[in-house]
Length: 320
Length: 254
Ligand SMILES: Nc1ncnc2c1ncn2[C@@H]1O[C@H](COP(=O)(O)OP(=O)(O)OP(=O)(O)O)[C@@H](O)[C@H]1O
Ligand SMILES: [Mg+2]
Image (cartoon, rainbow over all chains, first blue to last red; front, side, top):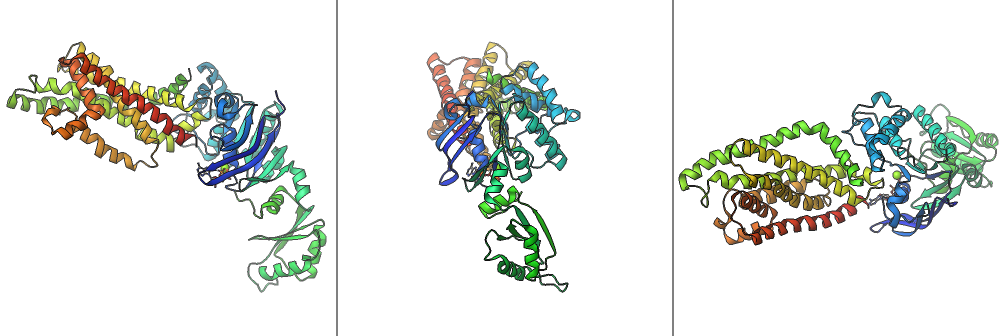
């Protein structure tokens, strides 16, 4: 097998005049877990659909398993497992039928498809709901079923578009664990997500997308080191000037600007609900703020995360 | 055979719903025959001694076989297709697998043909059981009815794939289907219509289906005429298939 599973060069997707994906370059290697991180409308799903050969490439070059989706779509899709952002389950069919019938589309015999469905029912922890119709299942259960269904063809490459959206925290951790095991078995993963912790835990490498372009790429650690300070001071300020001695937000921001305005290596980011100070020494920054007379409702010093990288790159927080 | 896998899906759905569906298929000939064949028929026969030398029942039953196929085709190709495109999203799930648009379309159309066959067999069976008509001509009506139904279903698949909502469908029903049923020679020969309306009958599939079924049961049509009717229906099937493939691709693989 070649050393690159997915290769994109100047990959572009246009809907009419609107450019959803704007000439991105990406390489995904066998066995790795690769992430697309970005806010709503960044072009993550559009990219995933092109890789999944369900949406034609507008321009640029794309190869999956060394093949061109325009000419070898069915051959590529035969080796893919796809968990789309929206569950495309049949609500009228039972849990079990949704699994084995999907297997039939991959050319599995009825017997084989049914046998694999048994294992996947356990994977999705839906064995006791196997004969129930899908429609009344909870959102999280449907999500688990969609992911299980993507595995029925025993794919080499798994495309997961926001796999854990709608899952409760425990189910998310269970899923991460399962994805990690698939990866150990040699399955390559491509994941999109809004969750920073998910990207940090799961992805060997990732790209941050914004407005159809790639804003940055690397391993989670590399990205944090390259684009962020070591620590972050978070201050929660009072929205109004209060009688209890806290500083009002507007005045607080002004004071912080004075405190850190001229000093290199420190940057102040004002968010609707809090103020972030990027610094290499959070405690020292907190003291400096105090010295200037800033009295926040609460304060917190923490390590920089991917969330901060994202904010630095795009000027926006990721909202789920 | 990938289309067989698609048929598995429709088979599982059918197994869940067949009772209601089959009951409806029995109800339709009973209602048509009761009201038209017997009710209207006895009136026509006593007033004018039948139509073109045959009793009204013999005139209307073959036409009803073609007409019911049109109704079944409509039910299977308008709201059903819209549901798979917009709400159920089963098509999209299929297209994420090695299946292509052509195979998904072929599989679903095969399922529609199966529905048409079941409905037509039941309709013809009821007509025979009630003793209205008999003979091999009635059996030949079954494939002719399926063909008539497909001449509606396939172009309608193509049209439905271009619609954003199901509103235009009620317009299709009101402005296309109901007039078709009235002016395609089902209930009276089209030569009693003004020439403009006769032209309308010639270009739509129903009249050709009606004439073919009538020829099968009553005889009297030359081979050239039969071939012409068949050619029109097959043209609807072929052009419809070409168009459906295009509109499905545009809609489902954006
Ligand atoms: N079929 C389509 N027709 C027109 N515009 C589209 C289509 N699909 C996506 N877009 C547009 O392309 C842009 C990128 O959408 P995309 O779904 O790829 O974003 P995303 O990064 O997956 O966002 P989210 O996090 O909300 O899922 C959006 O502005 C969207 O409106
Ligand atoms: Mg998306």
